[in-house]
Amino acid sequence: MKEIITGHTVKAYNEELGKINRLVIELGELGLDQLRRAVQTLKDEDTKAAGQVIDRDRKMNDLDIRADEEIIRLIAKRQPMAKDLRDILTVQKTVSDLERVGDEARKIAHLTLHFFDQGKTPPGNEILRDIYTMAEFVDQMLVISLAAFSDLDLNKALEVIKADEKLYEEFRSALRRLSTFIMEDSRSVGHVVDIVLALRALERIGGHAKNIGGYVIYLVTGKDVRHEDLNVIATEIAELL
Image (cartoon, rainbow, N blue to C red; front, side):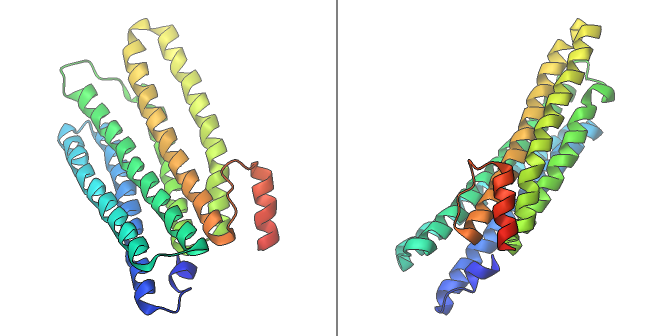
């Protein structure tokens, strides 16, 4: 966010933008940590830690509210126009996506409680493996998207958008592998349904990371690429670099 923060002559305005930027980064780092903790609770079969992840989601909600309040206060106080207003509203969209990352991480923590805190027979590690594989991939996407936002880096923004296509293929492959468990043992249907919901939560986190990549491109270039073909986006960015 360096270019946005340092692009104004009014020092107070720069400070206010910087404060919002720090809140966004804090929210993103917390969301990433929530994702990692939630997945670890599954690996460790740790229902207590899962409960802590769920409770900690309130902190993400609080940061979301604080960031929104700061954005509203800045708009009311400075009355930004044209590009400044578009930039601020785009940052607000970033905040919204990051808050939803926390929501999806919370779902995975709830799955730990569902599997290991209700006296049921939990699934084995083999059937859970795709969750861990996808979680690592999504974790990296989120890391890249946060770096792209922090540095307004077009290359990283493009990288995370490209990764979303691979994530979709990983998701489809995971569904095919899970179907074999059902064919081998119909009693695994319940576990498979729950795991698909977890994979869907991870896919959505990847989608939020992709969205942030698109917001970065918009912040730098002023071009909305949400509905653009990936090859077109790559060509346009190459021309700018």
